[in-house]
Amino acid sequence: MIFDSHAHYDDEAFNEDREKVINGLKDKQVIGVLNCGSTLEGARMSVELSSKYDFIYSAVGVHPEYADIVNQETIDELKSLANNLKVRAIGEIGLDYYHEENPHRDTQMAAFRLQMELAQELKLPVVIHDRDAHKDTLDILKEFPQVIGTVHCFSGSVEFARECLKLGYYIGFTGVITFKNAKKTSEVAKVVPMDRILVETDCPYMAPEPNRGKRNQSDYIKYIIEKIAEVKCKTIEEIEDATTFNIKHLLKINK
Ligand code: NI
Image (tube, rainbow, N blue to C red):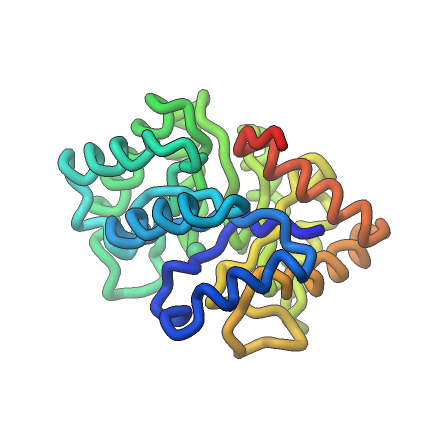
């Protein structure tokens, strides 16, 4: 059984066959999906998807790439979307210093802080996007000690993972862990305790081997689980059980 802790089924890559893909997931051991918005439009659509499908939950937030649209009005809309019972997190939010064309770092940090404040106010966990911004991300997480969540598509070092774990965060692994050049990610998976590990697609991106380069979907997580089982010397079942339990616990899903 698989619970995808980070997906984007609102993405245009699914426009042609969204219903078919989502309806097919249940026959492929997928028992839950957290769909994460990246824009306001994505957040709205995420809420729509989670209203339509019982096994889909949603996170609402604005990705750092679009940080320049975040103002009080944006926060108010996210807050009203979060009234929906299937909204279980704020995300994805964070910092992305990788792409030069992204908004200025100060703009990204301001948008990140506003959304962390919202999560704190609503007592919701957060879905963190951090790319090439480990230090600033960590500093901001530390400003909100009551908030926890997941550091999605974890790309940091073992030391950085330990810092995030200390703050109570979960660590999310994508298909990257199955790539040949992903030694660092495997090292991280080795040290993350079983009660803090999550699996995710980040679909339509990041498809694991042997489907690397294709459009990703939640059942492909089986390859990620296989790889984590291997590096942690656990059974596939143990990794499935732990990752499912962890995300349900984080999102307060009782069924
Ligand atoms: Ni994502």
